[in-house]
Image (cartoon, rainbow, N blue to C red; front, side, top):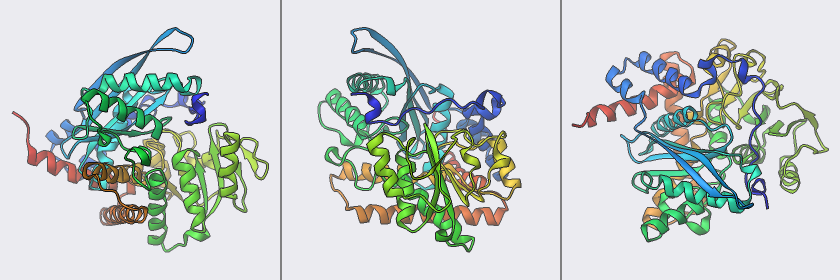
Length: 436
């Protein structure tokens, strides 16, 4: 049984990445440019900014495992804690051939900002292993996960750093992490990770949370613009957990989804795709490359598809200076982390495109992860309606704060989101001071 049967297939390398400047293709440089832009606008104390330009901890580990053929292979893994001033570190773990330390550092920074934006008592972290899980068996993946967990166990824990699923990891991987950590400390500790199966201490509503959060912020934005979501067309790039659940929830609420894509191809139907049928087909055929009821389109130009709302929910750096001018959507909602480069942001802003940034748009996942962590600690679990209502309250409140900031300061939503989050974070850093 190959891993792709339970995990997403890794993204193909973008043909355009090699043509981008280093400042545009390097995620850490993009993240620091975003920090500097917000800090300059807000006149944040330079000492606070300097603190945030450095990660709290960076752990690089070698992960040796025995392969099914009897050979041994050593993988490289990372766990980065960017900041823990507001609480324990929080962030996912991804398995992907293109994982790099700069990518993991940037993602940990964005998690710090994301948690501050929605006012969760967390700092930011991220982890990753350089591997291609589509070429590994289930047994190899389990051994990789357990050895990696053992290596990073010195810095994770329910009061220190709480991992979660990310690209190419899921609830089964989280179960292995939880079990390995629990065996290490000698008792069951479900609060060490989130995104677990319900049977292992997971939360109802967690699997759909990121996609549901994308729906909530999109609905709030178009409402603020005096529009009706049911009269708008939507394209969703990426059909993993985030993209497929977002598509399902938008469809259930009467929205027309005209295009979707996964790593193998895209589909388009101007009359609207039958999302329940498509989800069923993708599950049965492990993708929808041969789906017969819609027109096949290229993944390379997917972000240029005709639509009102574009939701990039795949990988980072999908909208760049090379294609931003050809984007036809009037609204972009970032379901993925870092899908839009800084140069693309400028181009989109000049075109009048509204962009809901990742640190708000996909914060539904970490919000319900927080709910899961709280439930694990209390050993008391909520029903799904409670989870969804609490999620809606937090995401809606955060959107309104950011939209008000954008209107007040006459800035785009990304800068407004960073200003809201950075203001909370800077106050905490200043109040705590520097030890010793």
